[in-house]
Image (cartoon, rainbow, N blue to C red; front, side, top):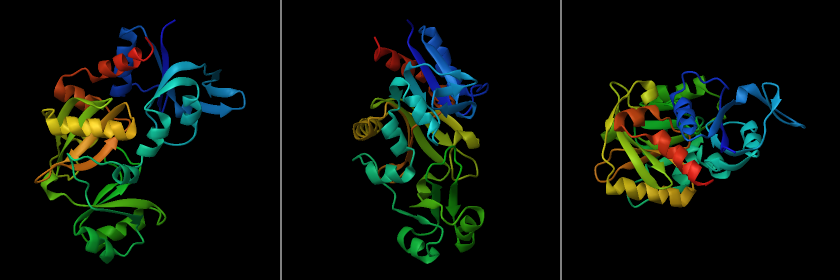
Length: 283
C-alpha cells in the first residue's frame, strides 16, 4: 500500500498554489498518495469528516497548511502523524507565543508589548520608541503588519480593526528596512536561505513583490535552526531574521511557509526534502 496523506488547505482545488503543487508532485515521484483537502470544501459531522460528499478515510499523515478553526483538528485526527505536529502548530501560529517562548544565543528578540489599540500611544512610544511596528498575531504574507510613525497612524488601527483585537507591538529595526533573511529548516537543519528585498516597503514579503537572492547558510543560522527545533519540535519551518548591527533580530517563524521564493532563490529542491523526510518516517 502506498503511503497516503492529506494537505490541509483552503480549497480542494489550489490550481495556482506553488507550494501545494510542488508537494503533490514530489510525493507522486515517490509513489506516495497526497491529496489536497480544502477546509471550505469540508464539513465535520457525527458520521465523520465529509469532503465533497464523501467521508474522508484515515491516512498516514497530514501536512497542515491552514491556521484557523476546528475542522483542521478533526482532519488531523484521521492521521497517524501530522506535519507540523498539531499541538505545536496551534501554539506557534501566534506571533506573541513565538517571541515569548523562543530564544537563541545567535539572535536578539526585539523589545515588544502585547496589547490592544486602546493602549495610550505615549506609553508604547516610551517603551519601544518611534516608529514602531504593529503585528496581527496570526497574520501571513505581510498582512496586518503596519509601521506606526505617528499618533495618527496609530489611531488608524482603531478605525480599521476592532478595538478588542490584540497586537504585538515591536521596536522598529531600522537596519533591516525593506530586507530580511528567510531560511528553511527541516528538523533543525537549515537547508536553504535567501535574502528578501523590497523597494519602498519596510516589509520584505515575496507575496508583496519583494525580490529574492540566495544567501549562505552560516554557522549562526545553523545554530538558530537547531535551537528552534529543540524548543518547538516543529518539523518544517520558515524562519525570518532581521538584520542587526551585532546580531540578527528574530522576526518570526512560519509554520506553513511557502516554497516558491526559497526554491527559486536557492535552486534547492526543498519540497523533495520535505517529502523524503515524511517518507522516512514510514519506511
